[in-house]
Amino acid sequence: MTTPAHRKTRPAWLEAAETILLALVLAFLLRTFVLESFQVSGSSMYPTLLNGQGVLVFKLAYLFQPPETGQIVVFRAPVTPNEDWIKRVIATPGEVVSIRRGQVYLDGKKLDEPYIRRNYAYNYGPARVPPGSLFVLGDNRPVSRDSRYFGFLKDSAVRGKAFVAWWPFGHFHLL
Image (tube, rainbow, N blue to C red):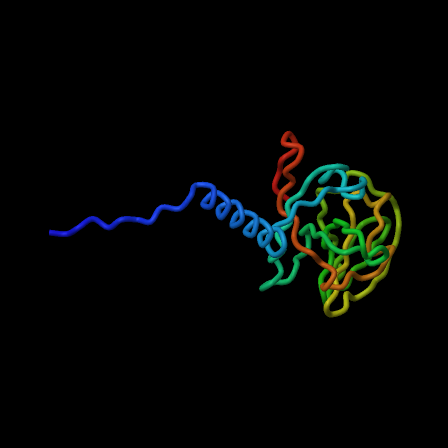
């Protein structure tokens, strides 16, 4: 015959405190290393993202693979390093980017950009994206300060990949 094991009971307040502490530590680790919410400031990504809109950024997205053309990234602004900016990757290392009358060309081929609603006739390049760098542009080109303004973006400045616009809830969509 077996005797039942008796569990040593602990005060409920101690278990609650441990649970809260564990939740806070996990939330801190998640926000620091995996996911972070950012708020869009300005209209440089209109119509894809609106001023004040919240986006979730996956910080580990580029740990094993580099950014790709068309992805939206959050990065430390080269001209104001205490700010984070959000733009679209247009060209990656080794690609030649040029802009003629507002139309983007990669390695001489016209880039399909259905997210552009408002454009204007400007020119850039041609320029080859150096290793360890990206060429980024805002979707609202007339008002965007981007690689045309600050040059190539260093990979090391990229904080992560924006993958969902979550706030306000009425404007929720995958990026």
